[in-house]
Image (cartoon, rainbow, N blue to C red; front, top):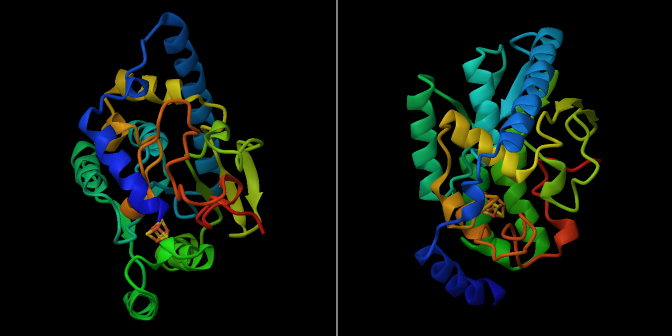
Length: 259
Ligand code: SF4
């Protein structure tokens, strides 16, 4: 299977890992553009917090580089936006380390949602522990059980949510607006980093010493569950390492798909 073949490649990349993309040269031009975009993101988030109120707007933190930028902006400015996260039960160890580090750095406890135990037991007993490699339907069923259903619980009663999505991340995100109505989840959705480049994200992280997932240094630009994420090679799309055995136009987990 492709997954087995590619696993050898992942190990090879990890051994020599020192991804230059996570350490961009902090030129005056880059620092200025990060400053401008940070102000714009802060203004958007502040306005959204005022418009919807503290109990009605929430930020989905999946601990990717973009989400750590937003976490820092929200915490540093004490914005009235709740932060939550989904623990699928299949996350890489590095992500758990980052969760602990984030709570320590910002002196907070994150609101973490888990899948329903009974649904996981039924899926695994029926299909197998790694059944997501076998078909798109089984992969999507796993994502639904471990991500979408917990997300629906996290968003229940909320009027707006915030994500760290960027337009350049994927062919499925090219026209991503800063604000849109999420017809799938039926609430307002804010994407404050929509126009940020990968370089700007990393410049922010370096300038503000934001904690980040160490897998990024090992050529993992986009990190999800451990068995469904691999490192990428030079020139590949930043989300090429997610569900790498599938068609690139079909690679979303259901959290951001429009209905
Ligand atoms: S990313 Fe993989 S392991 Fe995680 S929920 Fe989706 S299919 Fe399951």
